[in-house]
Length: 391
Image 1 (tube, rainbow, N blue to C red):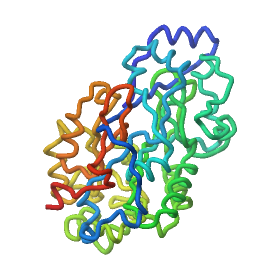
Image 2 (cartoon, one colour):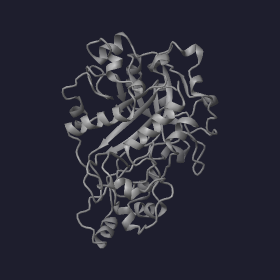
Image 3 (cartoon, rainbow, N blue to C red):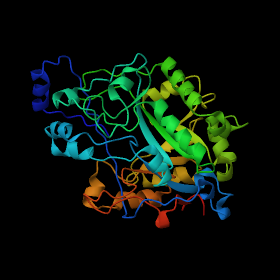
Image 4 (cartoon, rainbow, N blue to C red):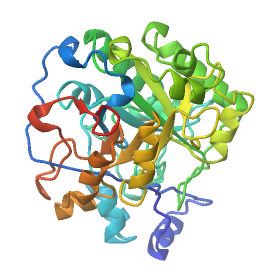
């Protein structure tokens, strides 16, 4: 979720440091959920799929995912600056995820989300203005890499907001995909992992930089980067799902998704943008022929297969309709840390009841500062049968 309000006080601080032309982005987001249990003590991934479920298809289970899966809460000094814009702004991004490998292995997460910024020449996001304003000179020990060096190199970057909310476990898409592939290769037979990519083209509030637009060439390059990092034997693509059908929608509605037995060990991708960028990605690829990522489109579109419907309360009936028609749906159990702070399971429970296959949260385990709220299946299971599509 984007935060669009920045106070005059913060602007005056920016001006007082004589940093001109700052457009620094507080694209501050959040999600969350909970039910107090310890992390999953995972059995070998090859045993994830129960014998009685081998005939189920990909759309007939539910798994837990994480939102902004790379995210580290801003350092305390920077959080104080963000707090000047309003307590709710700081509260909304006060969450931290563990490294990706831990999410996959200990928490049973099978869907992650990454915010990506184009940086073909390198250096565009290497000097966050928040770090300058907070007068931070030491490296953040939570980031196990040289931030300045990595951000100075060309490559697709992963951060939440360039100006203040930039702390991340994985600085580049390449690193994130390498870590995911390494875990996957070490855990053959795991349930499919969905990776959502939200392509960032703007920075709201003061950011000091102007993010680049993803033009057609950059979108093609992004597909190629994914194919380079993820071996073809691990990729589940729109072409594979469509098979001999004329369109993806036709394949889903006549043949259905592949069985879990065929999908285990696979990684697949979806574009988390529902704006003009999605249309650019679909240009000359109406049914996603040759593309790597699924896209969220209307249920009657030729590329219909996966939908992003993040509000399981207001969109409950729509989610259930999509699930009944065979589509995959991602929804959110919480946002902006509100549910965890209030220990309110209402949205989480509706998300589960909706039948959405991917339920995204910031709380696969509780944040004990607030409550016992989290999102987990009973007995630390990695998945459960879908209450709508697996009846």
